Image: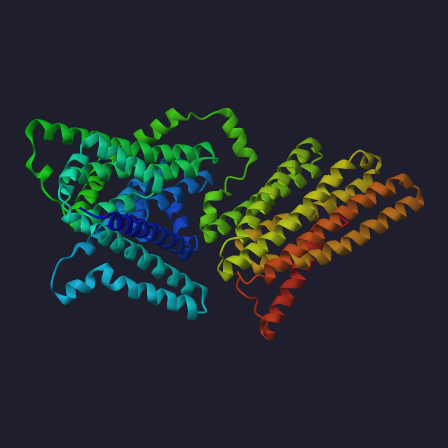
Length: 580
């Protein structure tokens, strides 16, 4: 029997190993997703239109990030942000469940028992301390942010494997305890073992850790196939809690995605374990009581996921229907979606690169809303313009709050620049929206303007509206040419503004317009001028941003730019001439 001191030391080592395992897995998953910079997730969002391609992507991504929970949480965020449709998630979720089995295969290397030096070097417990040390070295001495990320990845991987080795060492003394293996056999009674695996995995939120502990037991003591079946199946159901918790506070589509994950694991594990154990009780299957190795656990874990994913893929629509049946679509949900920017899901903040890309889409939505409100103002649809202004203000608050939350994350230099750029653009669009709101507040006094004054302001407004359109296109395409065009427009519109004001003064002197009309006329001109200033500011930010290709500045290119400058001025002046 073990002494009290041995039990305390063993428990401390087991808990410490589990803590290191979970921490290492979290670091590995987190920094691998940061290393991808959002590109991997964006590619997933585009490529998952086909369920089989999505399955392959889910398998590959989860094998890389070593966590089905991370992939599933990412999927919940992609759905809630509008990148993916609910139907696209099924293949990805099925693939994630298969991809996570890669961790069990890596951990099975700890079970290598050989006197060969080469095979011993393959054991993670042998090489992982050196891997972690290499990661620390990169973290301390590398200057590049991406190299530091690689350092964190190596540290996470090494820490995870060291934790696994600690757990194996912790339970090793149990093999000398009389009756312990018999206790395991009784513990593997279906209901007890299954419920334990579900609850334990829900607590630690990692099926890989639960299966890792099972493999640690298989290394040090004898574990039979029956125990492995109930623990693995229970762990796969228990890990669904991570996606469920991540969907709390998110949209209904996020909750439906979490339910798809849950329903798949219930359909996969509950019937399988039920049929297998009934057969065992009736026919007394001999292999159920035989010992299973770490490799055998990995084989079983992979096999059940491979077979059931192949079965479910052709009929994956059933999972979507079950989720929608549980949480039906409502009219109120559609209204909430129109009032909320779908791009800005808090779950995506775990990957700053992807979150920044989504924030850019949100700023694009703000730009579109501003253009709609100004267009409604131009068409004298003041009620619609007011609604658009209110919506723009909501979009801006959501985007600015999201960007502020994003700045608190660990960011690569290019992502940090992107966020600063987007924050400046938000400030400009906020000022433009404020000017349109002021125009709406004074639209009643504008009714006293003469027809000639109204026509001049109409022309001025068309020039502003076209500038807003070009700014939006330049922002979307990151085009330096379009940004430069706006700065040229600014010069032409400035000249147009002076001419319009001179004409209004002349009309007042000749009595064609009343002096009372001077105030609304000047207010409108002032608002248009402020909007053009902000458009010019957005264009300047785009030209100064390092994220677009630099504008050539040699003499030949400068001459070409000046020629183009004159052409744009001529075309714009002709289009918005006061003589037409």
